[in-house]
Structures are given as structure tokens and as C-alpha cells.
Amino acid sequence: MTFICFKSKNNSFMTELSVMDKISSLCKRRGFIFQSSEIYGGLGSVWDYGPIGVELKRNVKNCWWKSVVQERMDMVGLDCAILMHPKVWKASGHVDGFADPLVDCKECNKRFRADHLDPTNDENIKECPSCKAKIDLRVTIPRMFNLMMKTGIGAVEDEGSVTYLRPETAQGIFVNFLNILDTTRKKLPFGVAQIGKSFRNEITPGNSTFRTREFEQMEIEYFVKPEEDSRWHESWINERFNWYIKLGIKKEHLRIRPHAKDELAHYAKACSDIEYEFPFGWSELEGIANRADFDLKQHEQFSGREMVYFDSQENKKIRPYIIEPSGGVDRAALAFLVDAYHEEKVKDQTRVVLKFSKEIAPIKVAILPLLKNRPPLVALAKDVAKSLISEIPLVYDDTAAIGKLYRRQDEVGTLYCVTVDVGSLEDKKVTVRDRDTMLQDRVDISQLKRYLKEKLTTE
Ligand code: GAP
Image (spheres, rainbow, N blue to C red):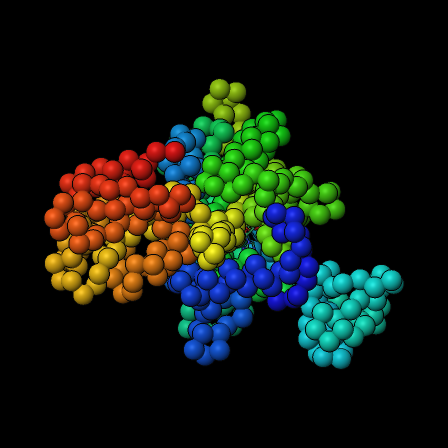
């Protein structure tokens, strides 16, 4: 990670290292994110999600699925295989075009993306990010490097066995277009949503889980009449922008950036990115592209199957245009984490708290006995936990003093801490502490489930 300066959310200057390093260290310490194969020294830009991180990621995916599939009548879901026929990647343009320009530094022999190198006064001469040597692009000509990860199928390793780990989930939706039409009888406009792993041999990864070699995508392919494409493109940009805000990201940390013509992917007629202001700068969270009829045309040509929709009202075949809102689960989870991160002064101490929204918070409730060496108290706390666990995502913790237990829960963004104390044995009441206000309520154990469920469902 570089020590660059950036402007923080509250407009004061600080180093990138301070915020991202604090968040990375919290992620490791509290079980959000671990480096893959850490005991072997780690694997470059591949990450594992720990016990808290997996809940965060699951909440992101569930909220997305609910909003784009379950709450809409014009959408259906799909779950395709990662491995696909190699011809898919010929048709999609990935075999020939999914490549970055790479250049080697002659001094340190490291390899970089030519278009990511810092410029000097002469546009042909760049600076090596590692050893600072000058790289003359007229002498060291960049070479194209395909980002797809190759793999083999079957017992014989020859050219015919080569396929790829998918670099996007989208192609699974395009090749199933006819199956979906046949089985759902959907009328235009309609969409198909999918969540799944994608793989790219990224050359300049970095910034935690922002750019990784294995990641998850949440993609929608929305099929529309060609003449309605612009309207639906606008509508999806707004829909997706508002989704992040509804789940707690501050509006001022988000922006929509339309692509310039020379930036568009080979398949896109237009595209706008939703960007988030990460500590390392404004960066893409999700792209919403108008892919026109590029993909259905390509697959028609390569497969020989006619990829069209029959419009019974107009009595004609239509090749729909496709609007594609395509986001990353890992990037969304990272943005929710960064946006939730707060440091507050409480009685001269710094309280670190993740202020996740109710939907995104990995843990909703923690049950904490005030004294761990009082068996009746521990037993009551466990009974309270058992009575809630099937309906409310919670944890039970009796491994430290109460101050430390609160700090742990604040750092993972737990919404409510329920403390069972000596008085609870007498009055059958517990103390419920609100994460954000730190105000406490004394609640009857018999009313606790209703109380918490009400809190968790109200705005
Ligand atoms: N089907 C279109 C497509 O894949 P993309 O802009 O290449 O478009 C869509 O990717 C989203 O997938 C990005 O906005 C980002 O959130 C996520 N994504 C792409 N590459 C990624 C990577 N290397 N690591 C993490 N997320 C990535």
C-alpha cells in the first residue's frame, strides 16, 4: 500500500495508511477478513471472510436479492456454473479482447499495467512504481495480457480441454436466454439476476478486497425493447444508486460517473459507474451498462441458435437490448464497512464503532452476562440467548469484563447488547444497550423477544 495523501470525509488531510490500515487491522482482529492461505505466507490478492465477514457479505447479497428479485414481478433469478463451454468466451469477446497492456521495468523486473503508471513530463516516459526507474514506452513496448484464468476439463490435457474460470457471471444469463423465455413466459421488459464467483488474473490488485483475483458479482441482465433502452438505463442507474443509500451509505460519499465514449467496453453503447469515495479515492462500486443487442447477436452467430423474443402483440421477432447493472459483492461490503467506521470520544477514551444499518449489521444482538463466574447468572444468560436464537441473529459472549465485551461488539457493529446482571436473577429483567446512543433500557425477559424484534424492524 502506498503512503499517499488524500482528503478524508470530514475534509481534513490524513494519510491513506491511517484509515485503511485501521480498518484492515480491525477486519483481521475481529474476524471480518483474513488473507487466503495466511500460514503459507498468503496468496496475492485472494481473501477469506471470517465469522463476522461472512455474515456481512451474506446480508449484502440477501438485501440485493430481496430488492431485485423477490420484491419485483419483472425479475427472476438464476445460478449458473462457473465453467462454461470455451466457445462462450470466443463469442463474448473475452478471448480476443479481455486484456490489459503490461510493461516490464528493466531495472527491477517487475510487471505493471502501462495505463496505470505515473506520468512524467514526457508522455512516453513513465516512472516505475516500485524502484522509481524511468520506463520508456517507445523502447519497452507494452504487451497485451489476457485476464482470464485458464483451466482444463477432462483427463487429457490438450488444446481441446482448455476452458476458463468465468471472468463475469453475465454470460451464463445470456446463454440461458431461451431457456428462461421458455420456462417463465416473461414478457418484455424483464430481467434475470445472478450472484456468483468470478475470476480475473488482475495485475495491479490491491486496497484490501477492492480489486481481487477471485470475487463475487451481483449482476442483472434486463431485457427491453430496443427503442426503450435509454429510459430503462436511466431507471436502473437511479434504482441502484438509491439501493446503497437505503442501506446506510451516505449520499455525499456516492456519485454517478458516465463513461466517456473512448472508455466504453467493446460491448457497451453507454455506461455509468456508481462510485464510492473510498479512503484511496473515488472508485467504482458498480457499472450500469447499456449492452444493446451485442451479446444476443454474438451468441446467435457462434451457437447457430436464434436468440430472439417473439412479440405476440406486434406479431414479430425482436432481439431485445440489454441493460446491465453489475456490482461487486466484495466492493459493496468494503464500502459498507468503510462508511460505517466511526471513532468517537467517550469519557476521554476513543470508541471505535461500526454504524451499520439494521439490514447490513452482521450481528444484531449480543447476550452478555455481567459476571462470568456466577453460575446462576451465566445459566440465565444462556437461557435468554436460547430463547431468541432461532429468530434473531445473535452471539453469546462471557469471555471478558463487560467494558471489553461492549468494545468488541461496537467494533463489529452489533446493534443491541443485552446484559444479564445479578438483579436479573431477582427481577427477571435485563439491560438493553443501544449501539449508537449507548442509552440503556431495562426490559422484562418475557417481553425481550418482542422488544428486540420491534427495534430491528422499525426504521
Ligand atoms: N458483466 C460486466 C462486468 O463484469 P465490470 O465493470 O468488469 O463489468 C462489474 O465488473 C463489477 O464487478 C465492478 O463494478 C466491481 O464491483 C466488480 N469487480 C470487477 N472486477 C473486480 C475485481 N477484480 N475485484 C473485485 N470486484 C471486481
